[in-house]
Structure formats: structure tokens, C-alpha cells
Image (cartoon, rainbow, N blue to C red):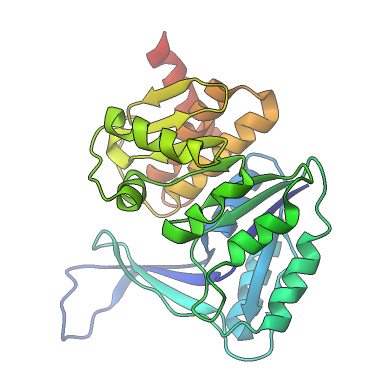
Length: 305
């Protein structure tokens, strides 16, 4: 089974406004409400590829109910734990001004809810895949990812960590199967600025030396790098296309990589599937569909030839 964990999911209110002006009333020209959060994005892309998963995490209030409803409408199973107080956050994403977002805080998660999540995860066993994605709620212990990974260590669960800073570093002693920092996050860990794919490789190897089995680094318009467990390094430029939506591109890359790995257990194929999925989402209004990912993969194979 495949599980994704989103500790602080959201309802994403995605709007466009023509000629947005501060200090004045602005009216939308398009609106969309979608379930959000990095792990949820992974589950959606996996489902689009025909791979079922179960989404886990915490929800609260009427917004939490809507997140669950929308996931069920997409055919995605969930085991979200409902919190009695507060509400799942609402994130406002202003498409007409690239990168402009207002993200909510989310509900207060108590220790009893964390224990429920740990009991859920304790059911995982050899052959299962677990994605730990994104930031954590402000009221949850900063070592939550480490606690989860430590509890599953040695049980044959393939763990994927897509997080930044200390959350990522704390996971490394337990040999996660895959980590996916972007080049900015990787640079921040070592206090350097990384601009090219060749810049990234030695620092990705340092994370591998600290315990990560595979290190996949996304670099937006510069492409991506994979330092693989088999000793090979794979590097590829970004595919050409019109950037429509950068939200969820990294999550799509992680989902595509693992979909490719589970299909063939071939690192080069998985790497290219990751690039295809990430690019397809970037060039789409929302997260990539299967046909879009397949089209991107064909472009990669044509470039290779």
C-alpha cells in the first residue's frame, strides 16, 4: 500500500484578478477551490497515473470536511484524523500575480491526535510506501518526521521525505529511500548558493553520505539532478513549455519518480518519469493528468535519441 501524510492540509482558493490593485476592491475573473497540501498533491498525481494511495493527516471543521469530500470525489481514500477544535486552513493563491499566496495557520493539533496518527502508521509493513511531505503545523513537535521514520526503521517501508531544513536532516540517520530538496533548500542547508546542475551534485552526495539512499533535486527552469543509490548521477535540463502553474510541480516530480520506480525499479526511468510529471503539472492549469505526463515522457526520450 501507498500512504501520503499531510499534517497541515488546506483548501486552496485559487483566483485570478485582472489588474489587481492594493487598497481597492478587486473582483475575481476566475475561481477554483481544491484540496491542497504536498502529500495530497502526491496522492492526486498518483491517482491520475492509476496508482491508488491513502491520504493521512489532520483535518478540522467545515473546511476539513470539504477536503475529505473533494478527495473522495477524486477517488482517493483517506484516513484523516478529525480534530475537535478549529478548522483546516484556507490558502489563497492569486494566479494573476505569480507566486503570490496567503497561507493560513491551520488548527491546533494535540498530542492525542498525534498518537492516533502514530497508531495508524504502526500498521505499515514491508513493501509499503510512505510519503512525508511539507511543513508541519505550528503546534506540532518539530521532530514529528523523525519520530515517524524512527518508528518504522528496519520494517522494510520505503519512505520518501519532501521537506526542508531540520525536518529533512533529522530523517537522514534512518536511511529514507528518497529525499527531494529543491536547489534553494539544498543550498540553505550548507550555506551556499547553487545555480547549476553541476553545482548541486557534490552537496546532494553529502546528504547521501548522511544517510539518504537517493537524492532528487528539483531546480525549476534549470532541470533536475538525481544522485542514486546505485552510484550513478542523472542530470537533465528542464523541458520547454509555457509555465502556467508552478504549484505542486515538486510534488508531481516526487509522485512521478516513485510511480516510475515502482513500475520498473530502474533509476533512469524513474528520474525521467519524475521530470515528466513535474513538467506536465507546470504546463497545466492544475496537477498533471496521465496523458500529459506520457507526452512529456515522450519528449524526454526523443531528446535522448
